[in-house]
Image (cartoon, rainbow, N blue to C red; front, side, top):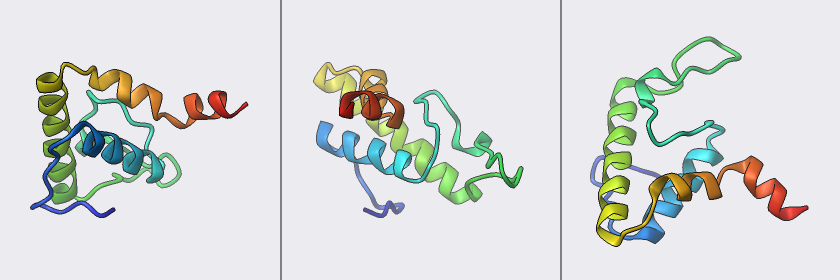
Length: 91
């Protein structure tokens, strides 16, 4: 799935899909991270253009709002979909 300025996260399933998408990008994601600060360690350059970082930060804010509304822990979702945790499940 691609994410654009008109993308809306409305459900827990949307939150989960968004988190999976971030990990699919190869980002070591934590919900408190600012996407403006994420650096590619191989190149030493920022991983996101300013507009994309703004978009992803806004989508994370939406994830927190949806999770709060549904009484779900966003941090737990992020942890459960982390590739390292997923690898442990697959063992």
